[in-house]
Image (cartoon, rainbow, N blue to C red):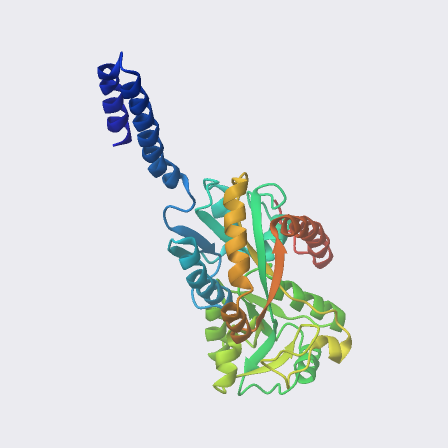
Length: 341
């Protein structure tokens, strides 16, 4: 339509030749019409013009998945577009990173990047470099992590659990959402500190772990507060949490730090896209994400799912990622997690 109007105006211009007023009017009409005609083209370039996709590297139903879905529900109206959540569990929670590594850098494909994204490349070849291959948009949240057992478990306290593990090497099993997850690393560090050995059973998502633990297939669950509904329902019992302070969800549950001085641990995550995203697109996403993240509605969601806001802008998030990538190399070496690459 824009081309048709321009051609029509150009063809009409000879009729005004020789008449100054008519010529001036024709130029004015042409300029005005051209400006109007350019408006749709400019609007078409505005971001976003169609739905966005956010890849969550876990199965549906876990705390990360649920929080991101609720976050997307609040973000979508402000962007004026719907947001599709894609669950890709497995591969050590790195499938989101791999998805954006190969995506177009236009801002329409984003991913949640949990801590294993920085650890797994030191364990095996993952096909990406977290210091070079992503555009970091915003750090969003951190989990309350800990260990829980079935309600009918003989372990009533964390002391009971550790004592049994010491006396029965390799008999205790624990499940996590993935190999190389923050929970996996923390449990191995706890084992080293306490002189125990136990077996790690990795799953593709937290919901699968919890099903296995409640069903008696695994001794304990190590992970985030996705377990909270089962604790409230009296089906599981929280033995310990790993934060600096006691969780508001589990005020009666001690932290590992207060029990034996183990340094607090959490697992913050954020949202990133492919490298070389346009700065204006990054700014649009960051500003809307930040507005929603700091809203009372989202704060309530975080509290409900045992998380807290851990905000970083893109520049700080990128620096954090580079630092974590270096730290994880030492952790992997220390725990002997590296595989043949």
